[in-house]
Amino acid sequence: MSKPLSIASLPLIVLVAPAGAQAPVLPPIAQVEVVARYPHDRTAFTEGLIWHDGALYESVGREGESDVRRVRLANGKVERRATIPATQFGEGLALAGSELVSLTWHGGVAHRWNAKTLKKTGQSHFASEGWGLTGDGRSLIQSDGSANLYFLDPRTLKEKRRITVKLKGQPLDQINELEWVDGAILANVWHQPWIVRIDPASGTVTRLIDLRPIVAEIGARDPEAVANGIAYDAKSRRLFVTGKLWPTLFEIRLKDR
Image (cartoon, rainbow, N blue to C red; front, side):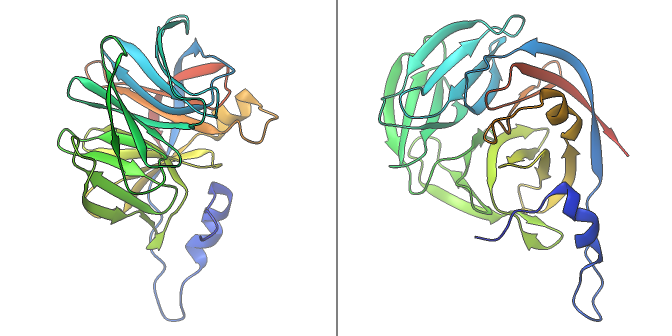
């Protein structure tokens, strides 16, 4: 697996190209403006985050601690919770019709939950590791820590097609949490303080979102307390981000340089 790129290394990468070749252009970099801060469970190892039915829904990882929960935005209170078996590590979360689908890291098991009650409705199986999950209204879109994104049938989780995420023409791996926003895919990159916007047709990274000021504000000492968690309220056009073991969830607005 190739070494993940970082924001700090991007200016150098811009200068590197084969002899006689023109270096690919770096996509635009957006800064973030914090619109609001909300409490977030500092013990939650956040793996998936969505906005649905006036609340946040979050999937939490680690064996013995994994669950899917409905969370009140204003105070971070868990209103409802569904527990994942203690032997499984919860991962990405997405809405599929009237159900929530939550992945597990290993074993290819995806749990299905009633989106209103969080009662389990069944489970499905998929072919690779489970990392992030989102949906475009036709397919579920899954990451597995590689540079690939898989478009899955929402009912069977069978692969329909895949794309390779590329930044400046190079595969970008460690793609983690996903969110569908205005016709594009936003993705956290594991252990990186930035989000990438991905063209769902080509896999090309078309924008970088710099989370470094937010990561610095959190000031986490745990190396695994990384940025992870993107949710979009399409009706009100609100974008939320958080991280694993973070005490704060941020509503942000994007500003291009």
